[in-house]
Image (cartoon, rainbow, N blue to C red):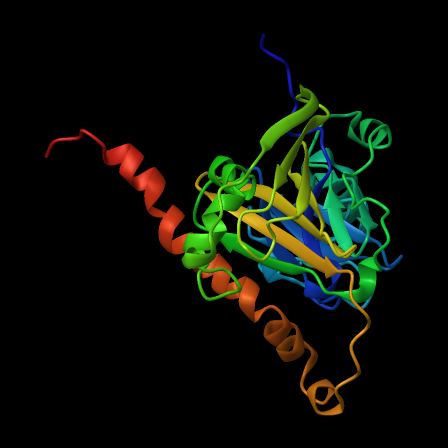
Length: 320
């Protein structure tokens, strides 16, 4: 049975707040839409079309002016957080300026946003009731658990393979022993999973839950629960025989055909580590990079394998 599912009437995490610079606009792509993210004078994060209505120049190449508005770099047109044009420098006649700024043709489409758990979420629907619709649904945030969600940073990267491949791979724990060899996984320690099954109901709105056992000699007594919540949330909780546990939150955000943004956080149930004075002297961005070095390595391993899958599918049985 076919189920209607609106891809635009959903909340998507587009970036950790820590990845944004409030003094400059940032370009992003979501569901094929080119958007610009910036913070207005009310300290609210704004998402709007990345195109100036004057000549369709990229607003993300612009800057934040002294009034806290977004200024286009092409001809200096300015826009506030509501998408309203506030200034056209080449118009000196006040009446003409007022008329031009009030015109619908000088407005930029904006989209609802909110900040939750250190992530900026965007509702990419441009219908007239988008704001109202967005208040009726909550983002698929991390569940409240026994972990301190702020104890680790978010990791983000875009991969050159599709949303479908990304979701499928995130629900396939058995590949880790082989593809991610050297990052804590080893082929010679592999064990067949004793169970792997869907638990409960499955739906387009609420998603589904998978439960499975361990897959190597180190986690053979582990129980894992993977909850996929449409459109892009995969929450995995690992329960170990010694009473310890871990949570892996992964968001798989479709950016454009053949590409997917991955935003992730791994939280372990361990005692807080002692502060490292020398490590904290490093620039913040370098600290984050070093903390996520294994995530970058695993992402590279995924890319090396999965990038060629859609290419192979497109060229299969093709003759020259």
